[in-house]
Image (tube, rainbow, N blue to C red):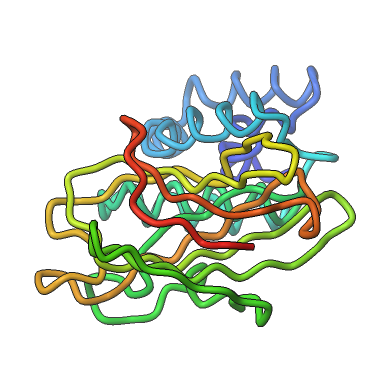
Length: 227
């Protein structure tokens, strides 16, 4: 492997003992790799959190993916867009390790469409709104062998808040599909007209889910969407 690309592999734990030793010897004398390592450290807590939830790499990713991840995350880190950094890290795990979560607005601040947000929204959709809170949501579901892939489009929510999408099973069980932060301007509001799009997953099959709840971190129900 190219030692200048090994920064990504080193952070992702994809090097064997010999490769790790060789890279650390190279790192000691390479300012370029040292700078890249500092830039990319922000993605490590994200990946560790995903791994702790049982979502990880099935096998070590290849050189091409590591190189792509390195370039993308470094670019996001320099731009200091932490919300999109999380999306890039989550998308990388999704490519090689199964279902996970990607959270970001449907367009970036420059007006361009984000590649993660442009992911296909499931055609099997249901919607609901809550006049009491002003929140409205569209949920798309796709049944998979491992459970359900879930897409959420949320509007009418003002921040600052921390929210979660929760799948409620027909047996009363609950699983958190995704969690995210809402900035002061909110999503789908006068200050920020664009909705928030969230892609997540539940370990329940579609026919096992009775509804999807969007709740704040203190338990307040913003909107409930029947499954």
